[in-house]
Every structure is written in C-alpha cells, then in structure tokens.
Image (tube, rainbow, N blue to C red; front, side, top):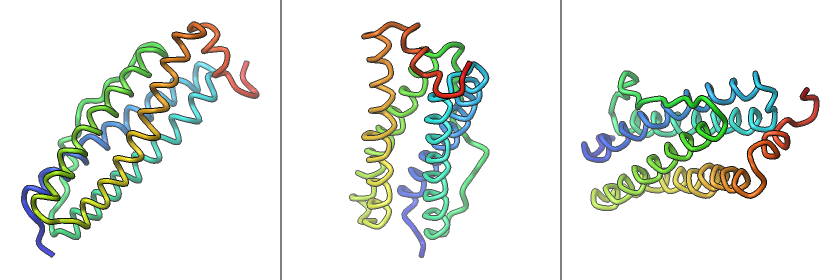
Length: 160
C-alpha cells in the first residue's frame, strides 16, 4: 500500500530518534552496570529494549507503506558523564521524541492515515507515561534526597 510522503517522512524522522535513543540508553545502561548501579542498569536496559520495539514498529509500518527506511540518518547520541547528566540527557531525548510523535500524529490525521496514527499513539503513551515520567521521578528523587543517597538506592542487590 503506497503511503503518504508526509507520513513516511515523519516516520523516518521518528526512526532516527528511536535509533539514537536505543544507542544512548545502551551506553548509559552499560556505564551504570560498570559503576555498580544495578537498578539503573536494569531500568535503562529495559528502556533500550523498548526503543528497539518502537524502531521495529516504525520500520514495519514504513515497509507496509512501501517506503525503504534509511538507517544512516540517526539523531545525535548524547552520552552523559555522570548520573544526573545522563538522566537529563535521556529526558531531553524523550521530550524530543514526544514532540515529534505529536507532530506526526497530527500529520497522520491530516493525511487520513488512521492505522499509522494508532501505532504512533501507542508509542506516545510509552514515551510520556513510562519513559519520561520515570526519568522525571529520578531527577525529583535526586533533588529530594540528594545525589549520594540516590546513588546508594540504585546499587541494588548484589552490588558492591
């Protein structure tokens, strides 16, 4: 089924963001594991897997719309140097993805592509209600209990 060029362009933009988020989460999760912050490692590793699922859904939809995904245009990966910076960088990515999803959903409505819209609404729910919300919670915890206490709480069983 031939898809709308406008919709396909937005799907490509979203794919670029999902691939960057995947790589950023991979880098951060591995850094957390190396530092002994096993709870953060587990959560970010899970988020990385979800980004792969999001990218897969976008790829499948693009192919259904008879478009060839371009894997060479990935967005910038922003690897932090410390936990707070890493959380802030991850939250910035989620805010960017959320804005891009909302824009793409609007285009889908204009182009009357309601099946793609349905897929994007699900991704938006994951992005806002799961990923971004969790990251906001972590930054709030750092403010409330201080970074040393937060880090200690993220060590998890078997750490240290």
